[in-house]
Length: 500
Image (cartoon, rainbow, N blue to C red; front, side, top):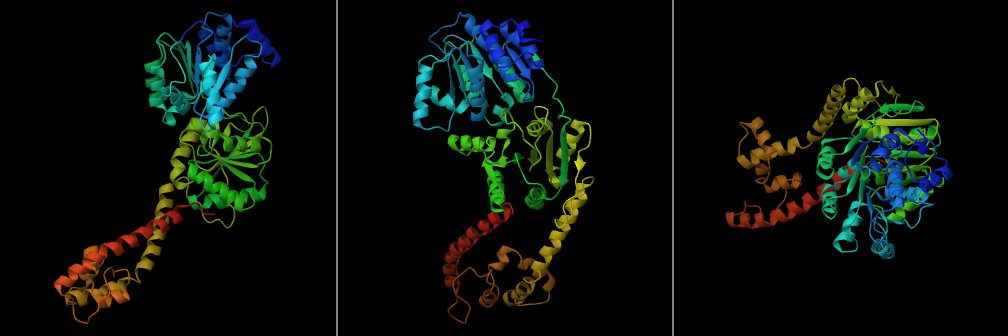
């Protein structure tokens, strides 16, 4: 359908002409007429389908037609991330280029005090459209910087993403500040139960527009490596040594792993940079600008980049961790092969993520090609029978642990006869020697040969200590035991970090 077939304002159509927008997308064709007719709407469509224009064009057209207060905020658009808020604001500037006296302000966190004051001044002067992240808008609301009593349009973009990030309570708090006679529009990539509950709470008899989640583009070459978690970083380094990385996004499941992987790649000589929500807004802007400009070859990111971020010419997407569901997989690899270009997508599947990846393959309707591990990286888990891989791995660990324990058993066994004065039940005493209660009764002679059992003061006489002296020693034991236990988590933490 042509945009001229829709009942949009002429000046909005002039802006679309300048931007070379002529044909509507399916979500725009279905959503724009309902919004123009004043109906609440819930739209289910994945990223890249034109959702932003689907709600901005009709709202701007209605505002331009008139009938709304000039000194009030008329539209609030909620976004889960700063990057998406910035992108909506950019689209707003283009679509409203020829519109009279329609202003907007983007409100999001991570900025300095000057930016905060600019946001405050823009809202108090009556910006027609406020584009905001939930946390920042709540901050302005709590300080009385914004009045939402006369809002006519309330829009939630990427609603499922906002709920995933824990913004449900913030959204409900914002809704309580809005008038009841408003028009509410919600867009989401998925429709879980939480979205249905939210829609039932804040929407009034909505029109539902649902586009089936499309499969990845045919020009994306998909591959998967079945590997253990410890093989992932060496595998990525081998991939980059075979093919020089350019325009690569690596999606990681957590912020900590994102930081560690970026550091590991930098130390290996690759031009990589991390992108996650712990960065300040300036740092995130710098990272995105450097990647877009080609100054950074590899962007290591959380799902903050998976949706709503328009980056062209991505040549390779790597899923360091298997995404939680099929839609997230489509969103991630959909960053590549855009605008008719070819692209590549690689997923690293650890043994615990094999069931999730099999669900993704069932959704795709076809198996993803499994690439063999590079020589020297070791054996891979069995994709068809991951349980056998786990048993094989655990049995190997047990054998290695057993070898380490054999060195401790003779010392513990020799301690029991000295403490209890007998060897008639020596096998059973060896079992009890491992219990903490028995270890505390170890004699001074054993403490010298097995330092891990020694927790009291150094004995000063050859004769056994009297009961009163034993009580004094016990007072000192918890202090040493606490200090030893404090050192243990450090070693555990170091082992849990990603290998370099």
